[in-house]
Length: 509
Image (cartoon, rainbow, N blue to C red):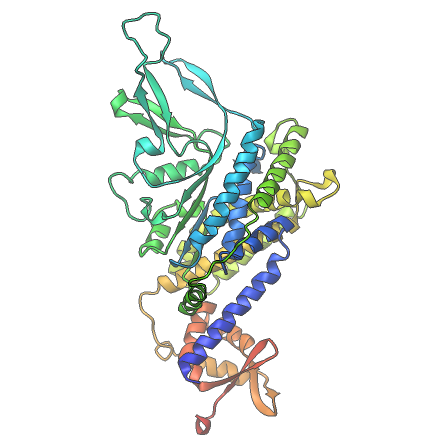
């Protein structure tokens, strides 16, 4: 077996181990989330984390008017905005073909009962006086393809029925036409790279402002998008967007620059993964195996739409039980904050041996990610409600809910840091230039050896590399890359579920 074949085999084993670890972790998620994730993965293979995040994006949207989350002087809503950055052709659109219809049907079920609270805002009337305006909330999904202001936030159109010469005319001179951002539901970008965030143009330069605004907390008025229309003599057009963003894109070339210089991605739960070539190769082979065949896929759209409606109904009922105060819908257990601190420290530990440029950008995400972790913990509590028989024990956010949410959050954070480690490195220095080969050899020499199949001198590979990480003060991802350079100096064997390495003597090379 040549070196390339060996490397590919180990990469596949490492990936399969990651998949197995993830599978063991997601068992802890609420039952309905697990079922949704598993069903989605039948059509979008390997994308379990994005599938689970999509579930929480929908759940956070349909419960947003019943839940407010206190955080000291700040109050957050339950919405989770999701940006999925992943190699083209690896299942993003396929997953949306499952998530989109579920969301659409769930929204239809909620809209049909017409019991959702309306949106009440104050707007100027025709003579400039503030009046209460009532907008009946309806949930829907739209995809963005046009980025002009009039399409996104709306405009005023001349009313053909208005008669300026008729003093008794009750028709307004202009009719308000809402933009597609206005309303409740999902704002879906299938090609987020063209949104104006990664490459601005004359028609897209306001996209970042609009996105940042609609992602502000729904507590207060900072989420309302306002624009003075020059064509209307400065008349202000308000856009009431209460949507949740679900955006997908391949990794743009300037992704790390956008991360560093613009704040829009920090407001979203970002999952970024450059899919390795061997996995892409496997995906292509799977598609070729299906060429010329018809595959029947039973997508339980109605099942999950009904599940979302049930979660909506339970949350709405709880909201009314506490007097219609969204701040009282959720309660928080004693261990809730302690477990949050635990995972905050875990995030910091992830950056322990990272380079300063990686730490700088990743740290910009930390505060926002902790807010999202709180939201996700709340949503885990809501998702668990149907399985809790005693109604008095529902809607209590516990440390267990934080543990559940952290399964998703830690994965997102780890992939973010790993991607930054790789993309921000301008030039790879060889391990010899950094004198790290001596560190590998010294750590190996200091470790206790074991015998495998009557051959002495083996050490546990995972523990070995962990010791090198600690000694060299570098990230695990970097040490694994450095190890690849001197891999030929070690013999590797698999024993049980672990790998073991032994230094090859010169006379054995």
